[in-house]
Image (cartoon, rainbow, N blue to C red; front, side, top):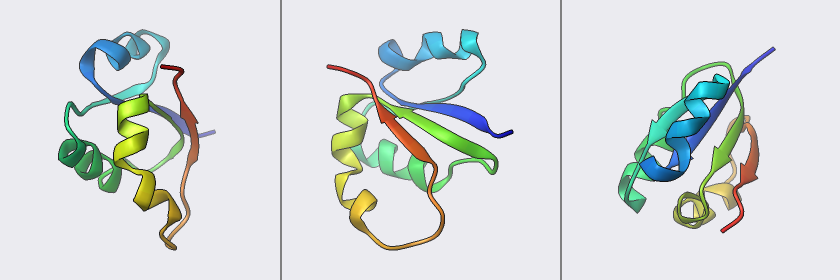
Length: 75
């Protein structure tokens, strides 16, 4: 079984650490893209804030290696 990661602004994702998620703090689009590219091995689900999802929109369409399941938080 894999792990869950939460990626985005501190205020929106930090609490998910209490549920066992790997929290990746990223407060601007460049930080989001860097965190996405460096996801740890074993991540099967990434929960994104709306701003993080917007920053990664072009990355989702790009062909590439296996990607984790993605869920976007409501605004």
